[in-house]
Image 1 (cartoon, rainbow, N blue to C red):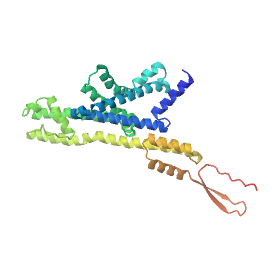
Image 2: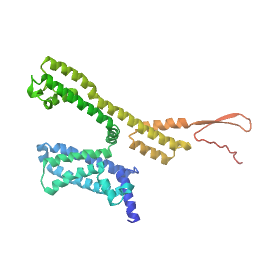
Image 3: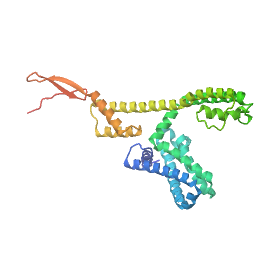
Image 4: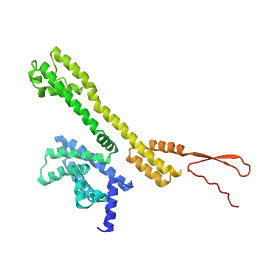
Amino acid sequence: MNKNTNSLRKRTFDLLERENHTKLSEFVHYFLMLLILLTVIAVVLESDSGIYNRYQPFFWVLEIISLTVFTIEYLLRVWSSGEIQKYRYFGGRLKYIITPMALIDLLAILPGLLGFIISRDLMILRGLRLIRIFKLTRYSRSMNLLISVLRQESANIVAAFFVLIILILIAATGMHLVEGGNQPSSFGTIPKAIWWATVTLTTVGYGDVVPFSVPGKVFGIVILLSGIGMAALPAGILAAGFTKEINRRKEKFRNKVLYFFKDGILDKSERKKLHDLAHDLSISNMEMKSVIREIKRMQLKVTEIYCPHCNTPIEIEHYSEHIQVKQKNK
């Protein structure tokens, strides 16, 4: 592959991955994000047959445009993934194709392609296009933050749900033994009682199935009190995970500011890099400026020198480690 092709592939990769934060890459980023939202809204509206029949030409044009754009984007991502060392050559491309985000990109276009191939307007294919909402994890910083938290806290979340499943089975078994004889249609078997146990332990409480006997009500109270803490456990894990992830990103940004400030100044290029990093880490401009001011105050140093003429002490405030005083030539 010649040098020009490699250069084009690098520019394509930077454009799609927003590596350089140029105006063009920002435009492509927000355009794709807007197109995803429009297609998701269209799928929701198409579920109403009246709206779909009335505006079918508009939905059809939007689908053609979005399917074309997403297909070109997918092919360009597969091609430009060669800029990453482990995805180079044919075998590397295959590895990239089975990565989670690449699979989401592929699944986002498959329903539309199948609809055109079989030439039939199937409702299930229209519904499957909602998979495109998962593409927002690539473009939305909030979705990206959520995915990072879920990935880091996955072990704790799985453990919490495992304990919850055990409690559901215990509650279903207990209610089956206590109330099964009185309400065989609702609690006659453990699988039947699982619905009540799940609704009660998650504190939803639909009220469609309730115990009638005194032992059943007492057991229900015990299970309900147990469910209060269990239902809040996954939410607490997520909340703690969000806090840790946000603090980790702030610390990463802070370390970068310290690195750039080691010479005592922030030039235009360094400020641009910090701005791009803050954007990628979902750090607001106010927080970014606050961290820079804090680091700047920390780096401020005071050096005391003496006037060579009158021997008067002079304090000089500066940001670098060294200060040099030279006599001006007349």
